[in-house]
Image 1 (cartoon, rainbow, N blue to C red):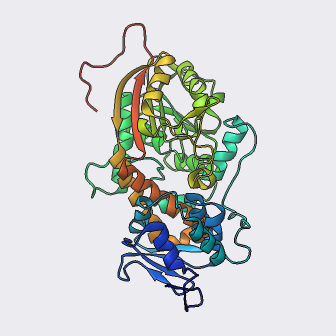
Image 2 (image 1 turned 90 degrees about the vertical axis):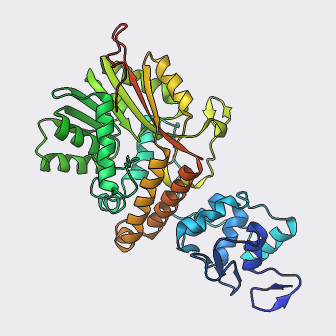
Image 3 (image 1 turned 60 degrees about the vertical axis):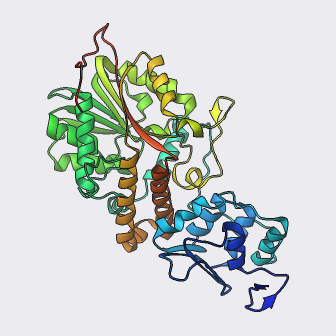
Length: 429
């Protein structure tokens, strides 16, 4: 016998708590509380899943799985209270959320008379138009993700405003030290020297170009498609007294034409480059780099066993997924072997490859801590829906790196100068 939405006992109806048990099993690692008064899971759990509205069930009926849950959370119809990482243990429980036909009927009943009619998605959801990975559509994707609020990003990322994997000597060194260590690692791999010219593709708020200019005496150009990033980076450069040596442009990498550069870095931008654009991307960077110059490509990717099947030359990613609809529209993650092959097809010689997967998990957990600590101001800056998107995205990404579902690599390559690579026999980084 199950508890009905009215709190009485009926044989033919199902409560929200019972529906959750049907979906996820009885031994839940978190508590569930629902608007109908029903519960599931241990009452003293460190995390609670709170179903606040019948609209949550409507979301799941219309879009079973990740997208329906995400829409309900972003809209505030579903909440994670307490330790969100504990709540995300749900990822190990029937990720496709399959129900028996009878249970689906009960879910529709719980959703109300309009249960089968889809609700409009939250306004934070985006669908882009135009040719995928055209310059105009890429710019729109970048504006959606980055042109939110510089203060919002500072709350999440910390003073360095660095939105990429840090390098942690130990888990307790702190985020700022770990980000500085990452930039220094990139500079060492590129073997930057005073007077050299660096191009940083997807420069964000200017962290890499500032570090390289301050600590290695280089001249630098950074390019980004985000106006808010470019404006903030220009302010930081002026405050550092480096306007004579560092320039940040609002520019597509495909439009950069003032090479050659002695070195090129691309840190956390590559996820915006589609599979169909790999040739364009690496060919352009090869043309901009002098012979003997080095390229450091730092990118998130998927392990080979999670390789998406191809259709019409494009990966069949989950376009209905949370990340594509709310976070990185048109984002694509490539297997590192494909990246190495694409680099070498453009005559780059790959010299070093390093995985930083565990480092990104630590970085993401630090960002989640920052966001939760500054939650009220983050909501004021970007709105509650956007703050919810980021909390779910950052925490979910952290556990995906910890589980090995996604990876991050730095791939170092050289543009050969005849047979000479310029590399030491045993370089140390």
